[in-house]
Image 1 (cartoon, rainbow, N blue to C red):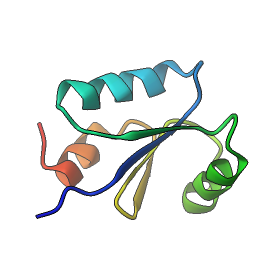
Image 2 (cartoon, rainbow, N blue to C red; image 1 turned 135 degrees about the vertical axis):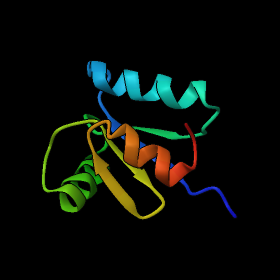
Image 3 (cartoon, helix red, strand yellow; image 1 turned 180 degrees about the vertical axis):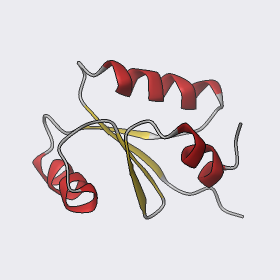
Length: 80
């Protein structure tokens, strides 16, 4: 099974974003960090997919998750 593409939509000042990134890094999950404060196109995609401006948003494959939903993230990535 291929590992899905993981993208984190975040801002540099978001402590929850940092917690999510650390969580994934400790589990050796590669991810792309996208600063929605600088990337209008990514911010628009995030809002379109989740209906909100709050960060973090994580995209695992085609599924977008608003917030740090540890249970769902672990299910999708098959990690603990």
